Length: 351
Ligand code: FES
Image 1: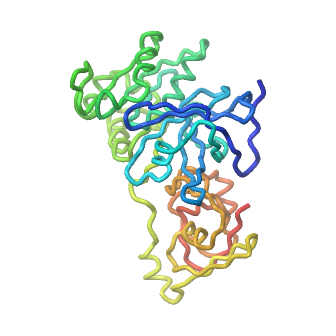
Image 2: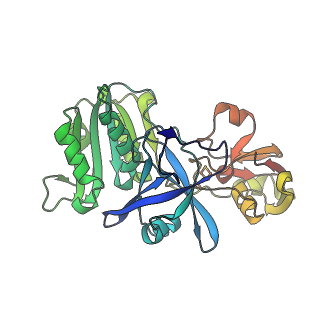
Image 3: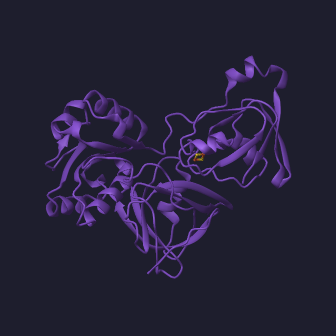
């Protein structure tokens, strides 16, 4: 088996190899290389950015991998959601054999972050995907001794993603403890309600000894983080990820009113594309680049995935997120276009 070689930059086209209904609201699918013989390297917990053509435009979104690394297929599980352009397209139109644009795996939410030998994998809904990748990988390694406590919240039994596999994992591995909380637990043995600080403590009395990996909707993650902190968890070994912003970054009207009255419009110049566009000061850089038809990818629009990374070489900007950038990249002037507000004429490089 040879390792799949990702290009330094840009996307590759991978083939959809299999699709199945995971729950009434979710599909799972796999992508493979064209020769179906290359294995994919990534760190469990990471995501990739997928691009599909919808109504003539290439649209990108980031999705966590749920499979193990070093396999010839990468697995994803995607839920259809109201106004979820790409998620709904994948649920309703993706076909076996179809090619999808894929950017290489990325992200800092992964199992190689410092953690001790007891972990708490905590998720809700489709947030299960990256922590499932972690659990599958840890359990597949016979030498690994990590004690895993997997706590998952879902609306009802039929919406539990990977339900039968989770039960099998629990049966087969003593070091895998499973707790599931359902909003509607009718006809199940699971607890009914929402996860609270008390239920977390009850499920996991040794929570203070664990490192935590958390993924789910924003409100769920905010509550869980507060509870874990209140329960005395070491928050230096707490990691989280969500692709759903609580509020999308907004143009900075306060800034433009107070400081940029005299410069209500700014010019965004991208020399490598020869484009120059006018936009109101306080606007987001991603809006300026998209209106100038500069081919920038914005997969999450939340300052998380890093797909919109570019460099501001001249001019004044403010950043609302630098999450996907390294210290060096920040020092070098890189920004996330979706999380960057324009306050003067600027010049941008995409390389
Ligand atoms: S689109 Fe994901 S970081 Fe900007």
